[in-house]
Length: 264
Image: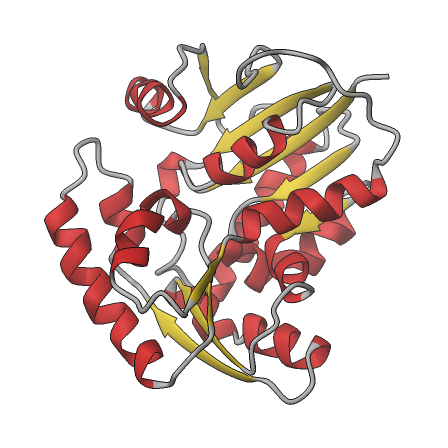
């Protein structure tokens, strides 16, 4: 039986989770919600993020989902329990998922300011991996730059040097991309660190955890990445988002504009 899966993010960062899910070639329907009206989340307050999370819960509650994938690390860190308590369905998050696969003694985390302020990554990593050292680095400008229609690679390159330098100095063995937008610039990040440092993309871990709970999902055979059963919803800038879907996912899809405060 086809499963209905929800994915949400403030923008295109959730594409990394969506890709990881779709690549598994599963019998699923996906509702992808991008809250472009309030993107980016990373510089918002804890209270703002939790208020937004409640609106997202209300919207998804009408979609008859089998599971929700929280593709936004900032929401994971500030409102995970709120989301789980307000939706009577399995909710999977990036932070707990990735904490199960780290193996180095010194771990670096790149994330938004709100995620770093919450200390959620540190708490989860230290609770599940005794004796490790966690070094967190906020990257306040990354999401804003990644969300642009025309990415300024030179500027992202300069920002990457600034954000990565403190982690390299701490001799980290692994760096977690603690924002779902960051895997979209992984090539730039990889070019700025020694080859001995491993970059970890949590979008793969969250799908692995999801599949542990839904091991009965059937596979569908197809030759290329399959987005026919994905519906996209945005809270603003639908035309711009349509272009981003085409640029990043190489597909043309209908984009539906919604208002989280009134639409169901």
